[in-house]
View (cartoon, rainbow, N blue to C red):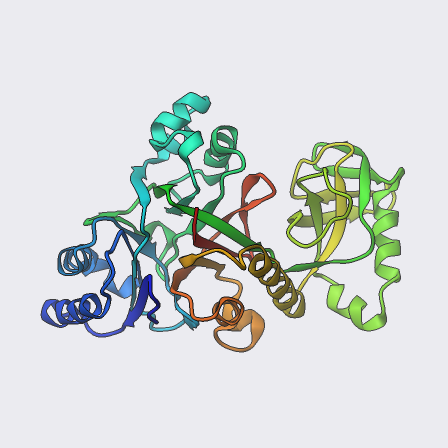
Length: 394
């Protein structure tokens, strides 16, 4: 797929230095803009020659910054290549952008840094920071610890990306920075200057019932909502659904937590979705996969194929309205391994919906073992999520 500011192509051939070089040369000749950023996503079958592939892309296409990671399933434009995925290469012209990339180690992810220390590690002061991308190894990068530091230092600044994946054991995943292949840690790309990241996060859920204030909780045990036993409220919420919706909701229940209380009504995108781990009817409590606070608003959620499509469609439409007068230069799409045709029962669902909303857009990406994306001013790790970062004129 080619647009004015991006070119995204898919290559799926047996590795040949000559053939790959010719293919990259043709890409660069077709793309007349300057290239500020290249992204590459690679299936595990190319692990042994990954360094050679990165070198050919950088040299032949004259890419000043090349980043990416491995995955068994890749995204190129409106296509999701879920089997025999090959290599996806994206060339981006980002006029006026200032990009800074760094390889982060496991120690970096666990370091106890204050905001100033985090600013020094990232290399971009918050007043000039327009968002970031991240590609990480799931077993050698502590995403939760990193996000606690990130949110303390760059609250309100979107971070979009995901954990690399592989058909082999996950410790075999790779992350890429320029000509280097890293089997551990993460690659972080900070944006400043005239380009910013605009994030779109779809957690695959639809709200059910009514929003409630949390009135009693102990750690992750939800005891009361609206001054009533949490289990009772859940039961009443389920019983209020139509029979067809009850069937959809059974075994697909989650909890949504509002991240920004300073608004009159709550919509999709306002909730951080977390697992409903279990319930105890005798005590009236529910165990959830989060540690909310008293006074925080929550609402039960349903996650299934229909809800996931509905949610993505709505958040994309909201974003389209927000960016109707903006220049969009392309983007990165990170989708959970639990989505794709296995969830939607048809190919290319997430990728094609992005193209439908924005027209032809130079987007590349991959299927993840966990997705990074903001809800409200904070960034979180998600599951079953589509996390989209758009390059937008600042």
